[in-house]
Amino acid sequence: MADFNTLATQFTQFYYETFDTDRSQLSTLYRDESMLSFEGAQLLGAKNIVEKLVSLPFQRVQHRISTLDAQPSGANGSVVVMVTGELLLDEEQIAQRYSQVFHLVNNAGNYFVLNDLFRLNYG
Amino acid sequence: MADFNTLATQFTQFYYETFDTDRSQLSTLYRDESMLSFEGAQLLGAKNIVEKLVSLPFQRVQHRISTLDAQPSGANGSVVVMVTGELLLDEEQIAQRYSQVFHLVNNAGNYFVLNDLFRLNYG
Image 1: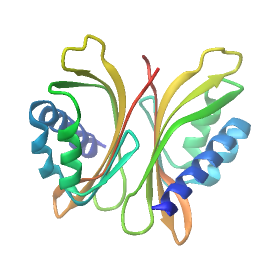
Image 2 (image 1 turned 60 degrees about the horizontal axis):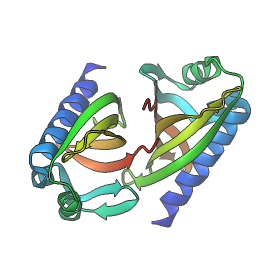
Image 3 (image 1 turned 90 degrees about the horizontal axis):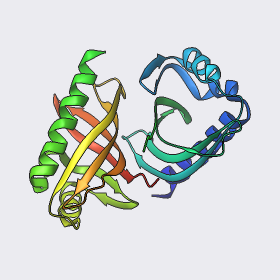
Image 4 (image 1 turned 135 degrees about the vertical axis):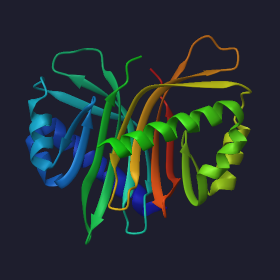
């Protein structure tokens, strides 16, 4: 069960490093059929998804992964990933907890994010 | 976008009602290829999954859904669901927060849980 765990770990590290450095660059990970549910808002397509992410009202963000679980999601190498973690915005001292799901779909050896679901965890 | 949201809501309500009433009955929702990641433990197949759930060290549990997000996960009517919620165990007064993902796969009109990922959210 190494391959999908490795894929999930490497993807997630790359995703958050890109998000935290320059989130406008995330568009390469989505396609026209990709979906994002972000705190109840629903976006379809790479362009709309990245516009939403870029428009979020913070300048700096730092994601920290607490847990990562992955499973194969079908016959063609697709993988479902659930992350729980913390994020720190701008000058804030207290991290916010979140949960995020990525469904990574294998298209001829290239993976893209078909499903992305994000929620802050209010405690 | 009503159908997959309705499916996700109805499934999730049924799942937690069954879990909280008699979790041994959940076996009908899983199949041999179903996977459960539960707090890092990995189980494969309906029998192993339900044995794990039945063996959890509490008598009574009550799930409460805080947020539910759903998206179609492919061409054949499959749906990915992310739930955040709270659960109350036995005589405890303080609920524990959790995140859970269900990947519901459509097999000739009958849905089963292919992927189930569960984590408590420690604060």
